[in-house]
Length: 207
Image (cartoon, rainbow, N blue to C red; front, side, top):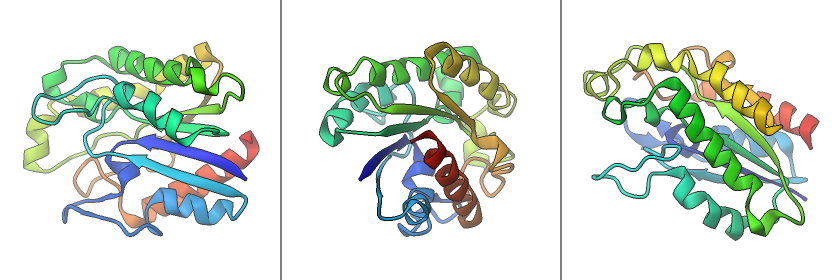
C-alpha cells in the first residue's frame, strides 16, 4: 500500500465556489485521485480554507502550513509521497508578499518534509505544486487580493526554481486548471476531475 499525503488550502479541502459548501468526497480532486489510483494507494486529504505557506492571520489562527505540517507528517507516517499545493492565500494584499517571497515560503514548507526526523529512515518523494492563477473575482475577494492576478502568474517560475534547488518534483497546476473564473480562486467540479486524473498519472510515474 502506497500512502500519498495531499497538503493544501481550500482547493484541496474542496470549497465549492459561489455557494460556500464543500464538494462531496468523490468530486474533490483528492477523491478523484484516490479512485484513479485504486486500492493499492491511500490518499490522505489535508486541506484547510485560508491555509498559507508560512503566514498566520490574526483573525484566523493556525493557517500557516509550516506550523502544522510537522505534526501531520508524524501523524500519518510512513509516507511515500507528499504533494504540497499552497500559495494562493499568500497573495492576499495584507501580507504584502512578492512572488519570490511566497516561493520562499513554499521552500520552507518543503524543507520541513526533508528535515522531518520522523521520516528520515524512509523519506517520501515530494511534489511541489504551483497553484492556479487568480482570475476575475467577486467584489469581496477583489479587496482581499489586490494585485494578486499579476503575481499569481509569476509563481510557477519561482516554484519550479525551488523544486530544482531542493531536488524534488514540480507541477504547475495552472497548466491543467487554466481558468478559475467562478469566483477567481476556486475550482468547479470538472476542474477537480481533470486535476485529480492528471495527478494520478504523474504520481504513478513518481512512485
